[in-house]
Image (cartoon, rainbow, N blue to C red; front, side, top):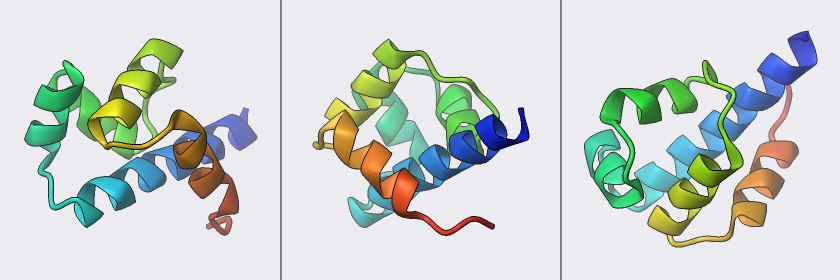
Length: 79
């Protein structure tokens, strides 16, 4: 279970990193992905077990492939 939480946190950090690179606010990302701002925030903090549809919506809103976000998350050092 602890490993799953760590992976969710890494995915959230990868999403946040990409969003910041694009100079988007959480609210802008939420609007672009059709999700609520507080949901996006909880995803970025690794608090949610994100459904694949929502991950795809986020990736499209960030202008990248979902696989790119997953690879970025996998390459992050453990913290």
